[in-house]
Amino acid sequence: MNQDYVVQELLGMISTQQQQGRVFPELSNDRILAIADSFLFEWNELGDPDANFEAMLEWTLDQNLAHA
Image (cartoon, rainbow, N blue to C red; front, side, top):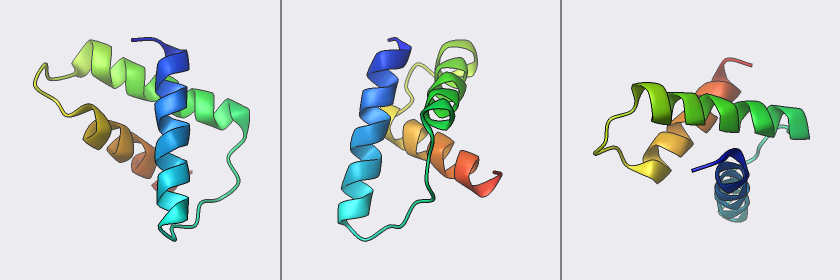
């Protein structure tokens, strides 16, 4: 898994949630990359092999938005 893949999944997740009515702050390219890097660190270094990819990506996004 690489950063490009995670960014595409993240953008897809944001798009889907926006279509469902969730409002996001403006996210720069650098911020999207930082969220992807944070996710990859968690997934590769600390991750549980049985972890749910989408749930963990959504958690990482939510944590980043909550602590920005």
